[in-house]
Image 1: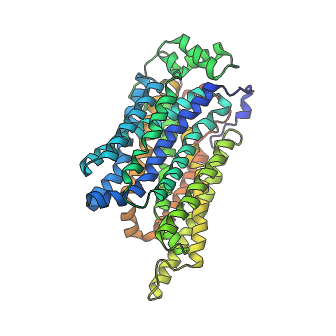
Image 2 (image 1 turned 60 degrees about the horizontal axis):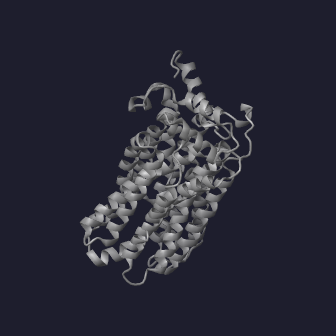
Image 3 (image 1 turned 120 degrees about the vertical axis):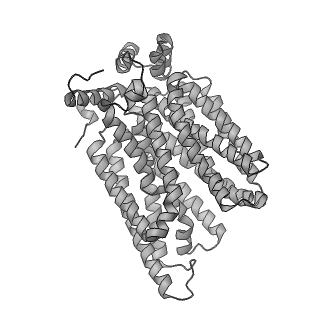
Length: 482
């Protein structure tokens, strides 16, 4: 087992004041998550209006809902190169511009063709932001706060979804879908405004030979740190070579690559989107019979729980560490999925045996399933949701960090698309109970993956994390140091 405790490093980091520049960094990562969360949540409420206006086929509706994910996948890959060539700051600004343009296009679309283009542009912007904003936060935040700052991205996603649920509920009467989608421009514009006064990360400045700007960036966000020591560590981590895609996939960096990509995929393959997809059916089984009741239940039992549980990760990821939160969350997720699998099996038997049984009949199994769903959402929200993003953005060496994070982020979007695309096919094949049991098995597999391959990075600087991988690579392949 690979385990490294921050306390063993002997590093005692000073407690830094929260400067106004650090507050701006937090605002940037929050707004980047907010624009994604709002778009993810609002499309469900807008679909009825879109269908009434354009009367699209089922195939076109699937494209409108799913192609954001494909756009995000390609956006994440392109963002890796953009972050290295243009800088983290400019890449975030471009992400916000693309998202804002896409939101305007889809809200003003005269037909489904333009709507699909807008959704793709929105997805591309979301993909770029999903890489650049957490990466920027990871490199700018002091070590003791890095986990919290990156976790704020997931917190903002959940908050954006909650806001979207509330907006959907308020604007559900009448055809106000254009306003629902048009409101997406607000976080996009705010992100541009928040990013403009900020410097780029000190890592990128040192990478491009702008030492004076790196000094200025450190002094703004980490005023009590030893500037020269910071610069020496960053310079050593960057080396002298220019990173290439071949370097990202080289054998000596295989361990962080496998860890990042694996966590990104498992975050999706443990069932979060499937549980949310089935929430209305679970609410119906628990006695929430009307669409209005189900919408309100979604807002409070999913939206609010999601936000509150994510706050646990923000508060404790730098105190307890990444691994304890992951283990606790995976246990809660796995057990909840097992309960939901058994409940689905029971309800299927009841529906088959009882003539005239309706999906909206309240049952004890439905109530138990509802409780299990809430536990699952909470468990995911303080573990795989935010912690995976934190780990992905801190494990890669400085000279390939942008491209390494791009690969992992693209893998996350690709896995999300696969789940969305083939979930119903899987349900037809093995049934709802079987699918939820399969997700529970994936939680167990993820637990083993984390236990074996994920080191504890709490309290370690990005440079110390890189040195850990370098030492491992050197021990495995003598003479392969950078």
